Image 1: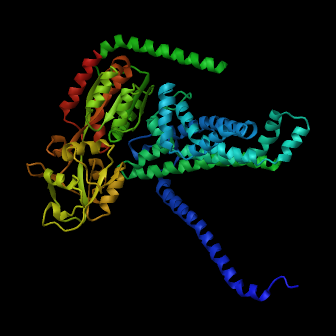
Image 2 (image 1 turned 30 degrees about the horizontal axis):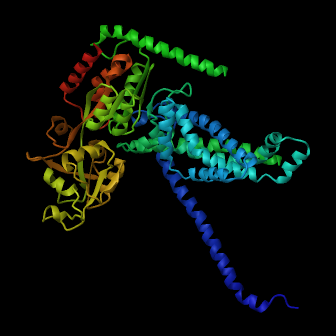
Image 3 (image 1 turned 90 degrees about the horizontal axis):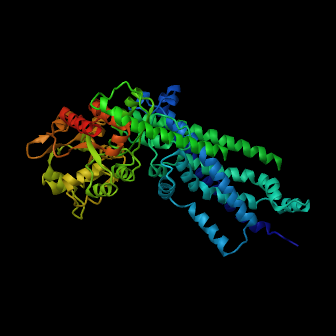
Length: 292
Length: 322
């Protein structure tokens, strides 16, 4: 019995191979497009900003003279902000995800919450700024402090973290949980000892994306009322501060052309900080990935 | 829990110290109320400033110099915009609010409602500069009436020939600062007189975008702060403004003397009287602003006020710190 009509398949073969090649090429071009734009961006920023990048740039406060301007306050401020946002958003986000996946009964109400979390991920950041201004800055009287801004930013990135963590928790194989129960572990023991470690790579991937967004946001912080010029560093989370994106934004809007280069130097610092943060997260992720 | 108690205690203690210091300064202030801001006394505390992004470079320069003299005083300057700054002054969140236009009536009413008294200080001049493309050869000067014809919306696209018949029959491209900016507000007040701006204008909050736009388009016209023109002189052509006394080019001299009218405007800072009275560092900082704004505003691209204006501000301040 003939299963394949070799002749008719053979006739279609060149067309099928051609289509395959065309799509391979198209997808390669799509990848190349992103890389190309990124390369141009990096080239422009580095050629423009490298001249202003030195130790003084990291150690000086903002200044009206481009040669003396530095990012000290903004850089330290950004680190403070991350140090506040990361624990708050991860604790709340992972907590919510575990509740939704492990404890909550699937009914209309939890469904409603689920839809809202997904929707929140698409809300423009400036809306979160207004929320932060009303609740944290004014109602809770935190002022334009690290804490108020950190809480605002945490709210902004929470949906992303929750959704990513939920996916990660859901992806943990059922067998692992059942084995744990079989050994006599309680639900809590199973979550903390089995589910969470297995889900951590996925949670961190979401966390990296979310924190990268938080470190680059400007709009909500302008609304919250974070100043740009400060020549002192925050000592507690109740002090005011400034962040890199706001400093960069301010420099790009200056009339003097030298400030465009200073802004480029600021962007390089922001990129390096971002890469540094991400690589720490990737390291942690890899460590846990090896265990399972 | 323990650390929270410690924090709360520290916050309370510093609050008490701040209050005591403020009370104490009330007496001490009498002695050198009229003295120079460069007093040897080391002050402490914070000075919270927000408001116009146009005034920001001046305040940044002043704060930078001030911190060199009084390193213990924490000055912070934001750029929420003139309107945004007033909102914060009304909420009692700032001590000073920078503005690139005078305070509006509704803002005054709100401040009154909250029982916040304030004092207006002028810090510098800015000349709103009208520019066209470098290749534009037919425009040399415009009258205020021409500006109105150009910028007020008539509901249809405008050609240069609509303004003066001898000009080319080509469509005009308009570039204007965003409607939130004090610069737009001022132009609205003196030129548009509350009539709508041409609807096909390109609006941008970033004046560098306007510079780019006008320098890249032969039929473009735009306006923005003098500092942006000064930095881009080689890319733009400035338009002289004729207010009935012949065309005047905006320069530091004509803006300072008031000859460049009606587009030269003062820049302000509004200080809450309570902050001046209760926070010694705010009073000291304000005095420092008035003493140094002339030199520093020139350095960042604005135009200084006549000497008397600063003197007037200092007298007003002395009145408050008495």
